[in-house]
Length: 221
Image (cartoon, rainbow, N blue to C red; front, side, top):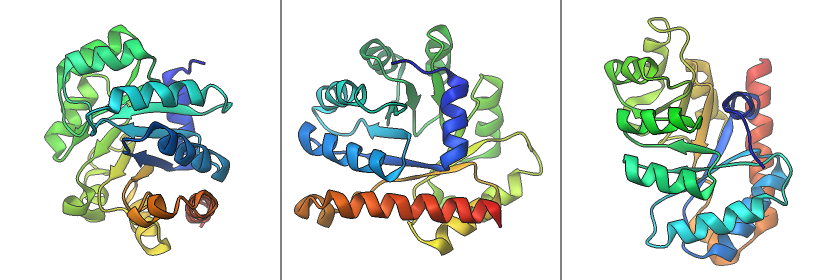
């Protein structure tokens, strides 16, 4: 299954939430992804942080084919070569913690959504000039919601994804969306060590549903 860049951006905007998963066991990662999907997630990122991340990701791609409408991308991509490798594998989109314009060229060539990580207004504008439709603000824990609220008036067309420092609480989510975030990414705050020890997939599903419900309530307020 393939998705256009606009379909992915629209899904990100609609749900406002992307789980960020890193795990070296393909079966466990699959169960976590499926639980998040049952909770209502439609855009999902697997992060390239394990020695066998490529193998786990290709397994997830095959599993995602059985989950209608699930858009699965790869995160923590840093260079042109790795970008090409995961595009060839079939990733739906590419996310990076850094701004590497060589990646923009590759993603444009293959018509893939490229979401670079930026931490300054200069990086953000540069990313936009190289075709980034969505920009990852990272690390959110360092920059804070005030950074977002300060730059939005300067570049009002920004569509920002916040990762790092986002918590699955009404207080944290309200602060980020109130500042102008388009969506947020949740990693270790969602996929906790305790979760994997217990493999309580129903609890994960309910947690995901809670986060989505809170985000929708914030957007309506």
